Amino acid sequence: MNAAKTFPVYKGLQKPLTYKGLKGKFIAWGAVALVSGLVLGGVSGAFINMYLGSVVALSSVGGMLYYILSQQKKGLHSKSRHNGIFIQPLNIKIRYENKANL
Image (cartoon, one colour):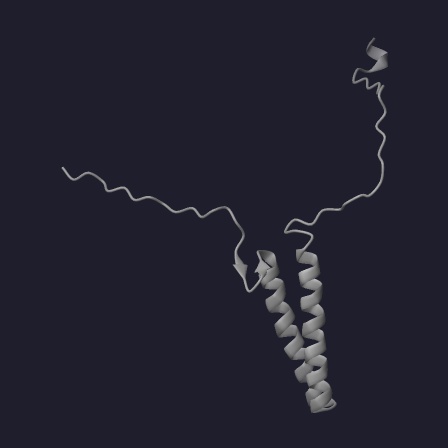
């Protein structure tokens, strides 16, 4: 009888995918930034001026990539961070029974 061969399965290191310094979902954000910047530059270059189109393309791509990198510093799962002191009450009276049934 032939026994079934088993092979080890590599499941990764549970780390996000990285490409050129961008991690996880920010890779897609970077691709969208590049494509939209080129489209904006191409449209403005076609209708207004070629030099203005190149300035628009470079500035929009640069601005969007700056925004993406600043958002990436907050983490892949950006959460709202509240700065302040929160005081929790010590005596919380919670009743789940209906007073009419008592």
